[in-house]
Image (cartoon, rainbow, N blue to C red; front, side, top):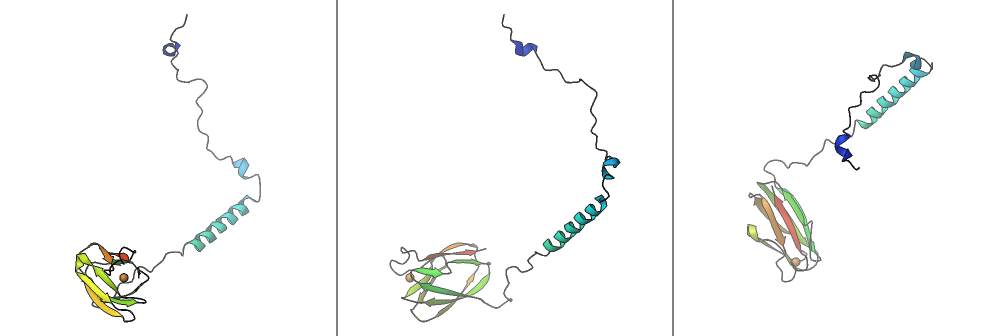
Length: 160
Ligand SMILES: [Cu+2]
C-alpha cells in the first residue's frame, strides 16, 4: 500500500533537451537599430568622466599635527562646574605636555593618582604645569576636592 516512495523516487539528473549554451554574443542587428547609439555611448562616457573628476578630489591631506621636536605641547584646560573641559586627552607616549589650568569658579585640582600628579588650581589664576607622559596606558583624571569626583569631575588621559 504505502511504500516509502522517498527512497524510490530519486531525482534523476535532468538531461532532457539539448544543452543550452550561454549565448552572450552581441547581436549586431540590435546595436545598429538606432543611429543615436554612438551618441548615447559618448554622452554616457562624458557623464562618467565628469563624475570621476568631481569625486576624485576629496582626499584630506591634513592629519594630526605633530608639534615641533623639543617644543612642549600646550593644552588649555578649563575647570568649572564640576567638570574638566576637555576631559579626554590623547597623548603620544614620550610627549611633554604643558597644561594651562584655569578655574572659572571655585578651587579644583588636576589629579592623576597613578602618575603622582596633583596640581592645585585656584580660582581665577592660571596654573601652568608640565608633565612628560612616558608610560603608555589609560589614566583616570579626577578633581581631588572633596565631593568633586563624585559630582562627575573626572576625565581620562590616554597615553599611547
Ligand atoms: Cu573640583
